Image (cartoon, rainbow, N blue to C red):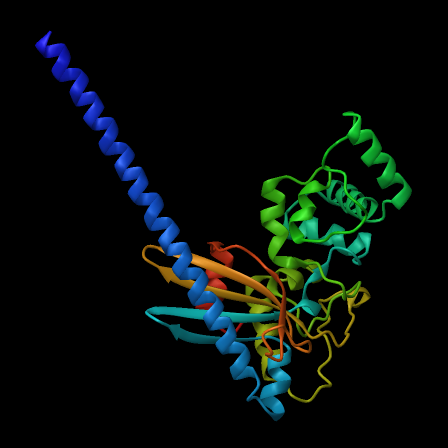
Length: 297
């Protein structure tokens, strides 16, 4: 009886210790995320304030996207401002452009990528009447609860499209955007590395890095696109919308804080910019971490 009692108590103590360790880890994670959120928001604000001081060529190049580093409290943060003109608009992009996104960025087979691109366009163009009928059917318990009206309101809505799983979503989420103002094409002068890879003919990492370096030094305003890029998707509009990515290390983890900024619309705080979307802090992917290390695209 004594041996059984000691064994039971040992098991109980072991369980309590294990649960305590889990609680400590969760507390540390929540604390790290809170620190990352505060540091990321502060660094983005500092970056936008710094942007206001740019003039001439510096301001021109910054409009194409730029990176800066800031220290907020005890945290070093790298902030990257990516123009949305260099990303793919889920609401306006053509089937052809979406197909290239899925085939070259998400590495899908071309026929599967085309079918998925058509499904995205079908989802976003659903008629309102169909949507009303879908809601009626849902109320009767016979419809797919993922059906929504025909417009992407957030990048995460891509997961509602039949055929899009979490793996594919994670592969393309850094290459797309959603806003009230966008464009069907992309501008190569502001395109992210993922987009250059999508619209380019077998562009390797070295060639993409070379193109980025060339455009980051050009202030003439007449730089033409390279021959490897498909000009059928080239489009350039004056959109003051940017994706702000703040990357930082807190403890042993690297985090990403992402906010979407309109630089020409004042917010309720009186600052000369406003955030039209803010994403929760999450672990930074390898690609985002590498971009932060390069700190300049």
